[in-house]
Length: 197
Image 1 (cartoon, rainbow, N blue to C red):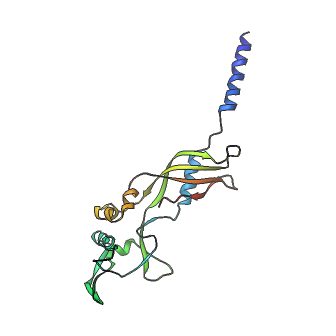
Image 2: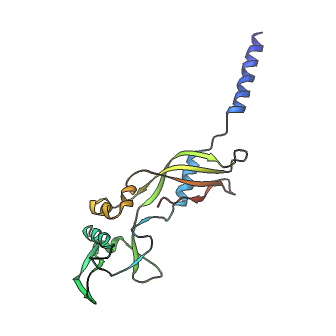
Image 3: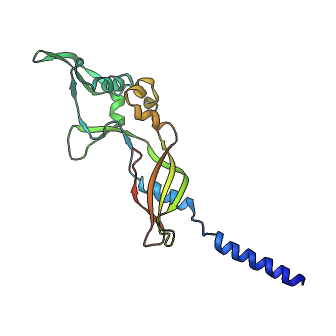
């Protein structure tokens, strides 16, 4: 009698596990795939490289706030003729300072063009991973948390935070989503990261 009860309990447990136990995916593998997709990607001041030196009319150009914040951070300087006339409008001319040269990333195929880029994206945790097809779980929608590592001090300055609102977000943990699929070699690869930028 006792053996029947034990057998019944074991069978019930196995049946319950077969129904309720699903093979868990290793979230560390998702984080690794997401971080691999971030390789070589950095946060940049402008979406596209700009040409220097650059001129801006302080009365009408909305870029003045950005240029002045970069000047306050020590990356830009006003050229010796700070204000000059182009036609009848006064303009400010900005170029790289010595400190700016060390942070400036020149555009390879466009002489004079470049950007201030810094840090790199780093996925830190998976919040939720949902298979896109539960019968064939080879693709997942992954909600994850990430941070930007290697943020320079000039980004944290109040002037920079006001001029670049996205920099304030870069200094905190954020969330994003990616589609991750089983690769041909058995590992996971990112199909479409919703860019954290």
